Length: 166
Image (cartoon, rainbow, N blue to C red; front, side, top):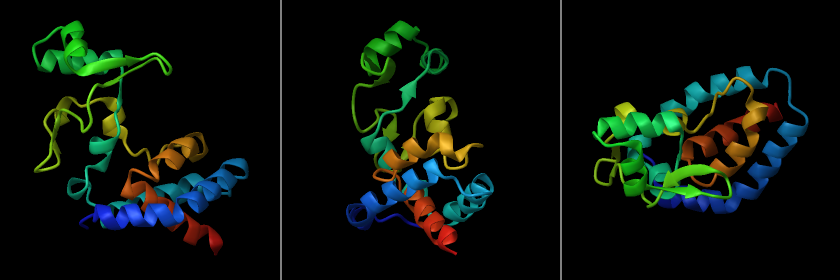
């Protein structure tokens, strides 16, 4: 389903705090079967959210680039990892991560919302938004952050709130 970013941002403004609190409670006291529930909800979310109509993650966030990512993508461009880093990345001293210099991502086609390096994209991008990691509680902090950026994460938390109220 098409994502309306304006509507999404309004929903975030109204529900972000309560969703973060909800996730915090789950982290402290995980209900039985949480990982199975996350897997079930993940399948439902992707029936309702079309990433190609959104690309908000690529517009507003930066993946972290591992050494493997840098080598693979540099090879794709027939560059050295050093040249690749100099051209497109910066080193975040605080977190110790290589990240995009620019936002939106330089590899995002703004018209189609498609990634120009999709086949060799960073592992962080390939796994985003990390909805059904095997141990959900290990990713609560990630979901708390991603609620604001990713309609799929927002939808997952919304569905979890409903499922866990039963």
